[in-house]
Length: 243
Ligand SMILES: N[C@@H]1[C@@H](O)[C@H](O)[C@@H](COP(=O)(O)O)O[C@@H]1O
Image (cartoon, rainbow, N blue to C red; front, side, top):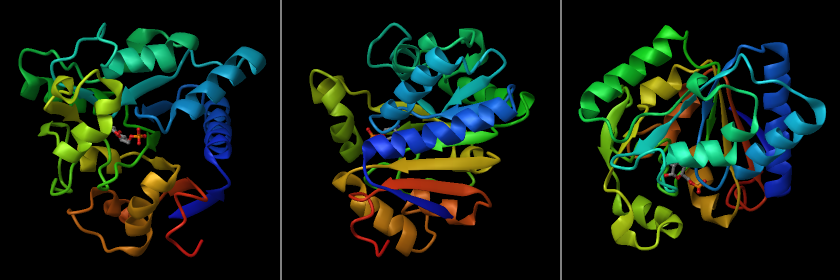
């Protein structure tokens, strides 16, 4: 794993944006894997700013998001589809029908998982996947104990994950109990992976990721077995390591 140590959230976001912008310029029809949560917001702002200032184009880009809450429709402000349009996609020149997110309101969630996985394959796989990391080491919504062989599937969210994400909802009761997420093996099939981490909250997770063994009890640990992972982490996220 290649580790880029940066000062703070701003530098993490700008460094990640620089890498992605270069990739999009050298391969305008790249397929990007996108993440939600607080971590990539600064990155997305930087991509929008660059698009507006320098005209980097996303017309030929396709995107796949990692996950979506079960039961939340695209017009629900807490759905990840809404987040993506609001935070990034709606501000770029990419057609929204080239951007894919699992459908959290599909009648048959299992069939939706199969459709999504097949779609990723049909489009030739993900070239560059952006990841955040959950405090318990989850990636996407793959909670501890998820088989490394998993494809896109329906998950029951850990109560710690529901609590961590409750800040976006008016009460914890509104946080969905289930989600659809790309599986660990779907993520590992990406050609390249860029994991971002900022702040003290992530210090334990980054410590476990860098110093721990590869185990399904800490989903992100599988990234050690990937050929092309870059971690961009700030001083606080790296504070438990020797870096
Ligand atoms: N499904 C998302 C993950 O993809 C994200 O990485 C994680 C961390 O979120 P944050 O970046 O807000 O700390 O939260 C959610 O559970």
